[in-house]
Length: 222
Image 1 (cartoon, rainbow, N blue to C red):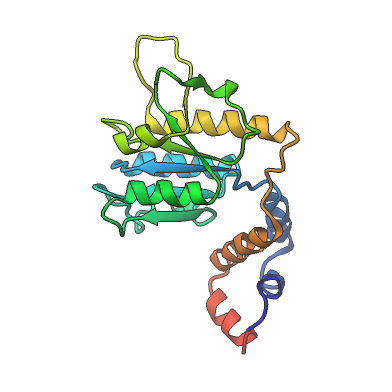
Image 2 (tube, rainbow, N blue to C red):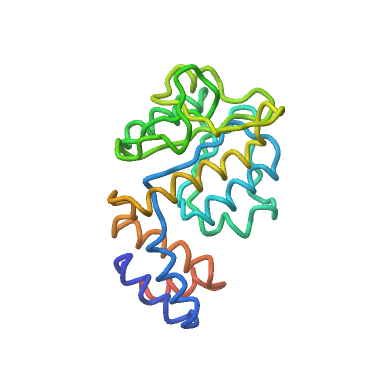
């Protein structure tokens, strides 16, 4: 079996130069310093809108907690964005929310709840230097579960000045992602993907871009 880097280099030969250059440029814009977690969203257009925003702002990882509401991987609504993202589906445990919290905390992420709270800060005032951030967004009607609220390390909110009490979840997520990634790119924080993960993501991108990628790789690895 060839190394991952060798496989990526081989797959490059089956892609036009323009797309190779696009991949080379965009992989340097991807980050895992920020990740997004959707807890039990039930409207597919909200899920797909968050995925599109994550891709646009260079956030590679999106986590989907499926306690009551299931994500439909066959939906074409989010297909254009999801093939460039790394999706993590949490649906096998009795309490998928707790399992996700434990997994992300073990990976070094701060658990950040996006909801009005007595101890919250505005998103533009959030300290980015304290470490990687996992932003949790709750279901459309009731918001985040008590499990997330009780275990969150920090709380953030998007400032609003109108009569409406809350933003649509996908709009809120987009504003959070924009604010955080914009500030990261002007900071001294090393937010880029490490080399090993860059290769993993590029491998995923090339497999999605090449129709017969699996057959090509099977011959190459013989």
